[in-house]
Amino acid sequence: MPYEFYYWPMIQGRGEVVRLALEEAGVDYVDVARSDEKQEDNRAAILAILQDPDLERPPFAPPFLLDNGVMIAQAAAILQYLAPKINLIGNEETEKIFAHQIQLTVTDFLMEVHDTHHPLASALYYEDQVEEAKKRSANFIELRIPKYMDYFEKILTNNKSNSGWLIGDKMTYPDLSLFQIIEGLQYAFPKAFSKINKKYPKALALRDAITVRPNTAVYLASDRRIPFNTMGVFRHYPELDTS
Image (tube, rainbow, N blue to C red; front, side, top):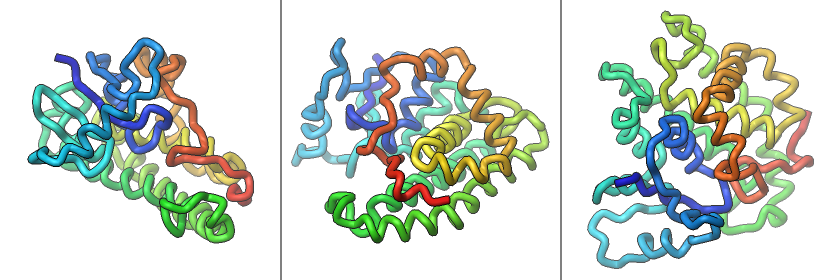
């Protein structure tokens, strides 16, 4: 049976790292909320699970994955479960642990990205917290982007295989997530990121290597890849893209 993936049909969001893994692996899956031929909005399928009062092990929120009756929520947990099944992590336990560690760091990073445009509350509109968002974004650009990018560059530099990947000599699922981070930063903070990205040649080379992998290249060129927009985690507001 194909994997059933549940995430909002109009944004990349936190679920995109799972979509990238499924697409790169070339496995059979259904993006349930976009499952018809026109990929129309089918959020009802997600809400039916979230609002089920009798579900013994319910997810808190999407993304979640259904695999032959097993439901896994949280992107990092999904990838930890999925990667060995779809050949996106090696067999060594230390590699699996480190991959999950990196993915949890990605989760932290995505939350900080979200908080640049919603620093007060997710329930408020962006327009209700613009001034606070400007302050949060300035701090994020000055301190947090370099903090995270330095970490990823360090991992790439210290990988003894000198493969250009984060772990060992083969691409693994955290590489796809780092690709998503770089793409998102280039979209959300093009001015700010362009001024520092040369400090991260190995991360940028990884990003370029991902784009030409056959399955991922097809996905990126397809309408299955939802464009970045002002509803997702990465949002471009010119007033937040400080230099």
